[in-house]
Image (tube, rainbow over the protein chains, first blue to last red):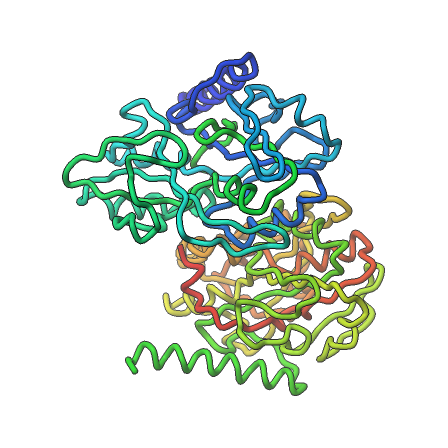
Length: 268
Length: 268
């Protein structure tokens, strides 16, 4: 076996180990886990809501780039053979009538309430973090062992059917001299949010206080660093809230689905 | 008005003039028309088939990259203000039970058979042809004033619901020394088919005779040129045929919808 193939097998083994641990009940944010493999946001909806959501995603591709959609009633995905989407994420959120009612580490029971759940896996900016690090750009929340900070914004998404809501963004502080490079590198991954949507000036996004994120955890911002904002796959959860969706299961922010797909697959 | 803004306005005026001419009954392939503005493939289906199709497109993004989806019953698009998708393409195909039954220059009557038609606009490789030409790569079918040649292949698309079918490709002969550059340039436009799916060796795609395309017109291939194949937005029509879709309206191959959107919008 070549060294390259060995490295690939080791990465996939790490992804599997992580999924097995989450299936067994371990709960922790996934940033930095199984580096080099793509992580994904999850939203699962009854089939009756699937078209509206797929259209919402198509109309808001920066925030909701779809990586895979399951067949109705099948909690599986091409992105990780043998994985069970009901159990293999570390933490889930259960939503009723647009309200977060519960966080659980196993969504099997909630998933069984409908026999036609459709699971959407959505690109995650964690995917280009390895590329940022390889270019010598520190990813603060990984360096500090925290969850990435995420914020609701004043930017409306384009509605689709019964769905509407605002864009959610993730934020990474980047030294001013590296912002352009971070933009260029992430821009080469358009299907996992791509280039930043906003650089500096958080108030223009309606973000008053970076130290109080709406999801995840705040991170240090050092002098000379600029807050850089990427569209975030938590945006569907904002739509669930704003639109009063009757029933949805999502991942808990920062607690992603780890796939077997190399990040490089989404590099253009 | 700046020179740049003047050029932009002139391009949009050319697109509008072309749409008005097609609305008035003019029929001709659109390759080379309104250069610098994106052209799109069309398929319109009753709402009852829209989810299956949107999922088919999501699962086969190389062949079916979605640029816009209309609301049910609305033959309009954000990609060209004031355009009417029922009349503003030069030539349409009407499909019944998977069979092509008619070609018309005005689809208003067929469109009215269902009050909930959903129109899908799909990226077209014509979008990166201006970029190829600017790089000094001849686009043969434009140079020779012909429609682009398109071929059915032996590559199955990933099915979705009731839809299945093979991938259709367009072909451009490229001098061997420019093939890599043509790949790189088109690869920067992932939402309009992106990089080639196959370079040389047509037989491996199941194409026996390049001089007999399934759609469009054959083009000259000079000594030292390699046939380069890109995924093609006629792929949905192959799915309509293979799946026996009860009713669909599409553009006629090579007779695209000309938008007001600059090609550069889809450049990453």
